[in-house]
Length: 582
Image (tube, rainbow, N blue to C red):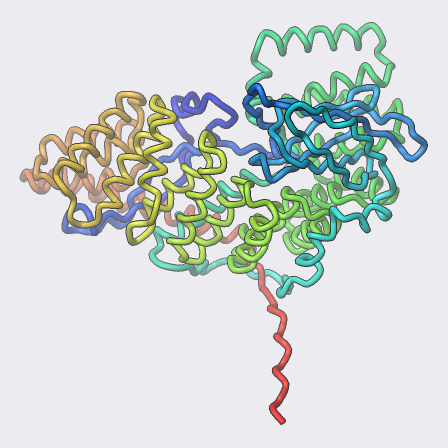
């Protein structure tokens, strides 16, 4: 039931995200349309490829007359400047943490900041700094901040880890084993279960892995990017055995997500200076991303022998998951949280639990992550996915609506909302208003318009006001005008026409839906019904037969995918017995 998204969807998102894959999603509109309940409505939904990065993406903050900057430097314990260190800036006054790398002199700068007290920390090559604070306020520039890297073991006692330890030291569950997920089980209908599986896949796509942001990958196609590549290649050609020349080009390719290009250059850096831990970690990431987890594991183990590092545990977790050892993976993700209770580490741990259907435990981890990082849009969205998997539909919608408020231009929460509004059995709070905002923010995005239309229709319940239906029809027609291959919008236009007994018109829409997506089994079923209503019995029989064939094939594919996913067996900690009354 998995179809690639039409290329037209990829152009819909013109900011920091793009579409990754269309996912399968059965839709049940029997309470709204027609007498016969659809067995499987499939929406080809183009979803975005989340930003899979080691840390949250750097988001631009609008400049204003009151915008301020925080500057500083990163040094080692001997006071020597550290280049290419990762610096993290956090504040309750901004939606997400900001990230920067130090320049060759160890310097860094964050500009365009709002008033507030910011927390800064740095890490590089297995070393980490204590957290430091700086206050930005109008009319006064804060003094430069100096962050001193120290051994990770010493850093564990720093205040930056105390917040995480209160949860990660004593979770009330342990992963005791795995079992084959041959009868997946779930809450509500099979359509809801498949929707939950689709949301889980999209949550995993948001997991902080090692790939660059979509914006960085898109920048790789610009003339400026190509000019920079040419200059770096020329510098390397002039000094092929120079570590810095190789390293600069390798990092350039990593930022663009070109791991195949980066890999041989990172290997050259490793031959020149095998003791450079930052390069070896990047090499491990490139090996993992290019399909060699065994070699990646060897480098990570070598790095861990020189010092424990939460990032290395997270990378090890990714390696273990790809190697088919989810028990080891979830252990590594938990270790990463124990060492550094950062937003990326909480997200990775919760995502692994959700992937392997430890739904309630994933909720626990995501709830804690959302408590610690309340303005993290993806944490709220992931919690919404976990809540939906546990059939807590209203709370899931509320979390996703909140996520959309933190970053109104971020498509991810709206796309999650669109999926749950289609699959939830009853109208949900707040989603119609938020999806209307999504359509307003992206008026040329066919998927945004489609979701807005369906939220109006689904949220109205069985008795839909004719004027609202006219609005739904107009929006669906806008969607197919924006994207002539939007098969789901054609399908729903056909359903709308059928509900008005306009069967000839409905047949035309269903045929268009099938033309652009022959695997859309529900379109065949609905087309068969429409043919039957106009007396075309032979054509109806052919469409019903095609529907049944597709349903069997797609159900078999879903079952195969479920068998590939191991389900965690969870042992919940026993609560201490209450003292007996005397």
